[in-house]
Length: 125
Image (tube, rainbow, N blue to C red; front, side):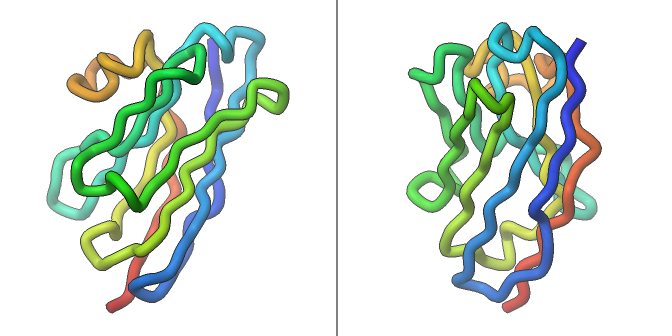
């Protein structure tokens, strides 16, 4: 069992940066790939980024590649999403997620085993 709690969302101007944090509880943190998804009003939840269990493989959605960076701290059981050069299209609720593999998280929302409660990110233009 893994519980996920996000923090770090807020209001930022276009071009600004935010760092989201996700605290994972449970001793099986290292057994899961970790990722981030987002859902904008009226849209489906979509993949943003994921990092493999061993931290080697990393995937990003094309829309955030080069601007967002996902990382994980195995000692602190934390996952982070550094978001730079934010624009209005990045406005959404961001969810931390745990699943069987980073490659599956990238292509299948249903592959997620555990979700966080979400944190709102609003980018003003």
